[in-house]
Amino acid sequence: MAKTNPLEFLQEVRAETKKVTWPTRRETVITTVMVFIMVALAMVFFFLADTALSYVVSLVLGFGGN
Picture 1 (tube, rainbow, N blue to C red):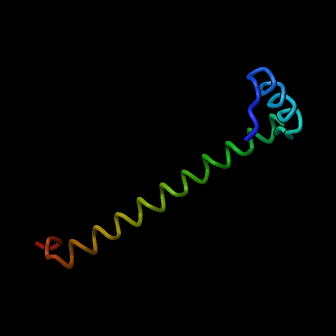
Picture 2: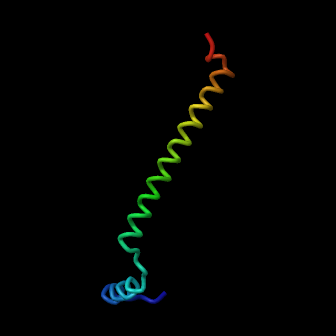
Picture 3: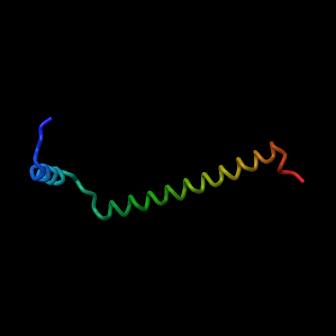
């Protein structure tokens, strides 16, 4: 493996970061909002699934009656 000095390494890193296509502010905001929406949907789904499974288990084990 070739060894480079820290200065050369930093120059190569800087050159590589110039090649990256960075997202625009609008793309970042839209992506962030979509992540929050998906998290909220997952939260609702898992809450409903947990509630339903809890109810079914309590009925099967006999805790759900009078």
